Amino acid sequence: MAFRFRWMVRVSMGVMGANLAALIRGVVGIVWYGVQTYFASKEVATLLLFVPSVAAWRDTSFLRLDMLGWVSFIFMWLLQLIIFQRGMEIIRKFIDFCGPAVYVVMFFLMGWILYRARLGSLSLTLGGKVLSGGEQLHAMTNAILLVISYFAALLLNFGDFSRFAKSERQMKIGNFLGLPFNFVAFAIITVIVTAGSEKSSAR
Image: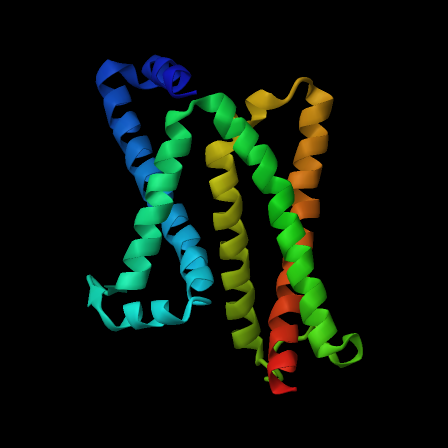
């Protein structure tokens, strides 16, 4: 995809203009990789907290990130580096494994939260505050911008994962399952886990 990008951008922007577009694309890719690694490292840090002695690592910080955060971030960085060095076939197999694994963990967590909070006491309405017209508009604007930013990331990588589709029909089915269905499922599970966490902690 990167090679095709360089060829196509030269048609519209010329050789020198293509360098600027490639530089901007590279910066976006670096930032996005860093963001993904950071958020993944937060999950690793959460798992490490189950080890009692690890909690002391949070007392030391550097550049506003504690030792636990740095250890988790470097671990995720090295793990991704190892996977990337194995080539595209290993990356594809890793993605095929991680997709279902994420759903298994999500549904397991949702089931555990529902068991702890009890289904009858669960409300899908988060917070009891009544918003005014201006506050509702502000909240809706934030939600819209979050959705746009979410799909912008998918558009950035669409060319990378769409190459695995063997036909246009497979691509349409994948887009339906991966976009509206997946987005709604994630939203519902997120609300249930958030609301259920509050209920279960109060029990």
